[in-house]
Length: 249
Image (cartoon, rainbow, N blue to C red; front, side, top):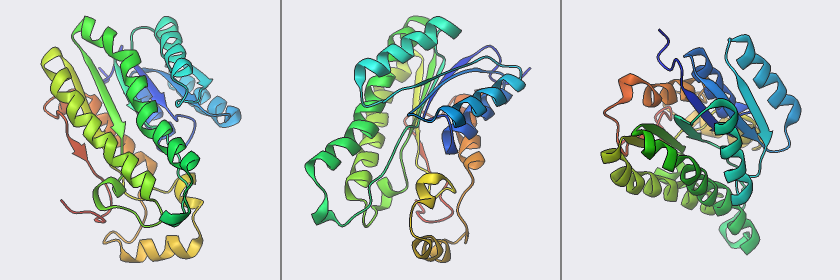
């Protein structure tokens, strides 16, 4: 029997990149998938079609996860349409790269709203039902820049570090009640978010990585599947970091 058979997974930022790869990995493992995106209808429809071809149900909506009311509404719709959420993959994210002194307050607020506020309240939206069943899995996507810092990405790095703190704190409350909370801190992954950087930056980053390449979204999805599945039952408050050797810890 597939390891996630009969489960319902909610994936934020699920139309492309790491979110899409993880949604498909969960579907392949037997889960039905609800996922959100932000104004990415064509890619979302393609992802949903792939999930359906795998024999699983798919529900998707455009949602700004920084809008707490919209996030809660989507979580409620997903649970009503597919069933209680067993797995939350908190993945939606974005970045603004510039020197520290050039960031505006609005840009700082946006980065923290998407990454920290968005993850916090999406988790809160599914958490009570998990507690009621005595079962659940929440996986928050941080970044290796939370561990090492990133020049030209100070608020992003700070927000991702906050996600790790959030994960560890919530896990201490949640694990005794049957809900496992963990984080993944990917290194540079071949996604649109990384490709938006100048080619010279990408080439220099690859050259200093021990792996000499960027990761693939499917490699992060495999980590998520480990944490969500029965083999990940002893991970509590962990932060796994597939990063090609960029951060060794």
